[in-house]
Length: 167
Image 1 (tube, rainbow, N blue to C red):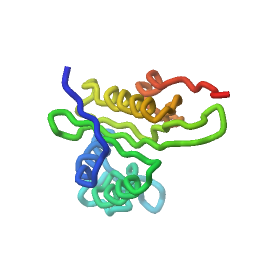
Image 2: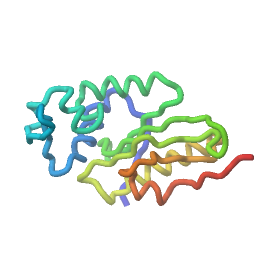
Image 3: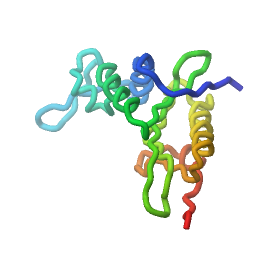
C-alpha cells in the first residue's frame, strides 16, 4: 500500500488544490454560461475567474483558491488539509470545528473531501478521514460530520462516526 502523508495545507499548495478540483469536472469539459441560460464548452484557459468559479468552487482557479485558502488559514476553527503521495499533493479536505447544541455539540465538520480524479482507490480519502478522526480524538471531540448534500461522498458517509448525543 502507498504511504499517504496528511498535513495542514499552506499557500504553496494552491496549484495542487486547484488541479484536484479541476480534475473532478466531468469529462474535463468546462463551460461558459450564455445569457439564455445554456452552456457552451470552452477551454479552461479561455474562462474568466468568475466563469471558472461557476464551474465549481473558488478552488477552480489558482487566484481564487489562494484567497479561499488564506481565509481558511486565518481562522482557528477552519482547517485545510492536504494528502500527499511521494511528496505530491493529490487530496484535500476542509474541516471546521463546530460547537452547537446537542446532538451535535462540539464536532468536526468535513466541508470538503476530494482526491484527484486520476488517483481513485489509492486511499487518499481514507487517509484524510483517519487523520480527521485522530484530530477529533486529540481535541476531545466525539462527533465527526460530513456535508449533508446530495453529492456527499458515499465513501465518507460509510466511514463517519455516528452522531451520539452528549446529554
